[in-house]
Image (cartoon, rainbow, N blue to C red; front, side, top):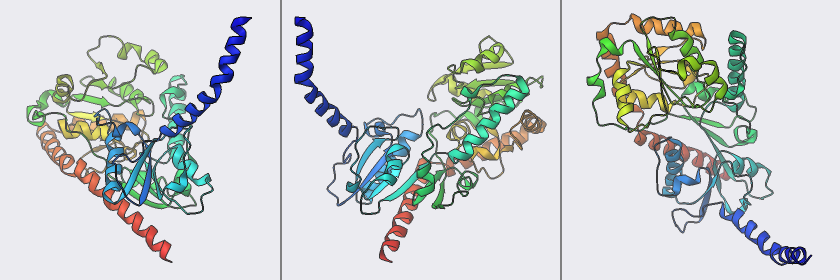
Amino acid sequence: MIFSITKKSIKYLFNPLINVFKKRRKREDISKNVFRRNYKKTVLISYLRESFNGIISKRHTNIKECYTAGEIFDELGYIVDVVDYNNFSSIIKYENYDVIYGMGEALEKAFYNDVDKRILTIFYATGCSPYYSNKVTMNRVLDHYLDNGKLIPASSRLVSNQWTGAYTLSDAVIVLGNSFVKNTYYQYKGRPLLYNLPAFFYRTTERDIVKQKNWERARTNILWFGSSGLIHKGLDLVIESVLAFEDIVLHICGASPNEVQFYSEYEEYLCRPNTKIINHGFVHLDSEEFNNVLVECGFVILPSISEGGSPSILTVIGNGGCIPLIPASAGLDLDGLEIGISEVTTEGVKSALEVALSKSEYELKLISEEIYNLVNHKYTYENYKGNLRNTILKILSIKEKNNEL
């Protein structure tokens, strides 16, 4: 009885303080003025707060993409606030902002605020339109089911939070990838200003892997380099296709073991020692293991149904000179040096593999050197930042002109 009264008393006394703390914590979910400036204009970047913690991780380019956007707005005279794109709880005072940039919840909620002034909204899209991508990824899951009798939606890349306002109501959309990726946004009635932006990749090795490659061996070794969404990214098609070729050895890096159903279906190849299909698991980009895989492999393959500029493919080409086998939906422009996958099916992958095997060692050596040089010249971080800066400047200038009318 005494304990019960004491417990109630404590709750009565401290609940108001707890509520105040919770409200304060919600507000602190936004990193304020990350560059410590005293400008008149302010931008809210809705993406990844960890980009501003002083460490730029190389595990994914998105960390640096977010930081770069912040740098650009800082250079253009904006105070920069940052919130995580998937933060559903923060209390955001939209009247404090002149621009909302990025993706996710904070950008979406900007269209529902009651602020009198019109806030410039810029959606940063890291891939194809969510509507398009959801449609094609589910079609791939269905095709896999019809071909193999296994329904595995967990190996798709379904976007559950589509944030539809972001790509229909924003003033502008900046799309990571080429014109294929950008064109998936043209179906919307709002028709915002659309710009595409080539991706970049990280140089992770000082070794001259292109010159170390033995093409007599490398021409029959192929690398699938991806992450989650194993059906979306076509690993099932690649496994089934290479089994039809006697000479090809498939190397797999990054296939998530969390996709238990997929691993169960392909257990024979993914979970047991195999000379035909070698699953390396997660491989660090700056490791000797990764370098050795790049030396071993002549090709990289990714029959993905929907991508945004494919930084993973750029990483393999730009560090190892591997020749890519990719469909148009990979979102990359490589001056025709790639081997195209005409359709994302087993037959489409097999046809691309036949083309790859038909080329001489001399041809492959020349293509490898040329595409390596192309990627290291075109898809640099410096080019990415310059293109993003110019695009943001265009959007801001159009906004200013419209305000003058």
